[in-house]
Amino acid sequence: MSLPAIAVKSLVKTFGDTTVLHGIDLEIPQGQVSCLIGPSGSGKSTLLRCMAFLEEATSGTIAINGETLGFTENVRGVRERVPAAANRAIRAQIGMVFQQFNLWPHMTALGNVSEALKLVQKMNRKEAEELAMAQLVKVGLESRAGHYPSQLSGGQQQRVAIARALALKPKIMLFDEPTSSLDPELTGEVLNVMRDLAAEGMTMVVVSHEIGFAATVGQQITFLDHGKVQFSGPPQEVFKKPRNPRLEQFLDTYLDRGASMLM
Image (cartoon, rainbow, N blue to C red):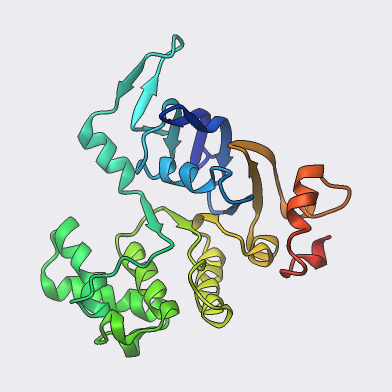
């Protein structure tokens, strides 16, 4: 049996006196799409940021493909920082796409995707731009390679952000509400790219309020509430009735987001 892509154990995250994550235990299988759902403020984005080591957990551990990220923790709860070089190598396995596109406004779509290759992987310009163009083709934006972010729609900008993350050849992709700032038509553009990635077997963790996407593409659905995992399982179990009462209440806020076929 293969190691999980991500293994979260007893993860706690506090900000000052506020505990946002309460002892999270969760495994993300290899090659599957795992969706984190739950109300705003439930800790979904914080958990995702801890997985990417953009936030340091207060206690507990996260392992990426069997390698501990950030901090190890012994049986007495004593934490030791993972050496910087090893941590960078582990983090390099992870690509992340945010709510905001975070594109460089002075660079074209091609420049935005190729710049990371030149900076991080020290590629020469020709090699970086060839690989960047291949990723723009992948997200259906080859005809917009020479356009600046201000000349692109929100959906196109987010697809450039996805191409930028994919260009670094991550083993795992994390998406933090990638469609939250898009209208329904543009949301479809981005979700279609994500569906294509899922079909290729990319390991993905997606924080989203797009319940229809979670129901039809997600292979593992994890429902968080008040910083705790309330339920985790395949969509057929999450969306069937009778459900966990809190999950039932949460899903009732969505009239029909494409999940009705599983209910």
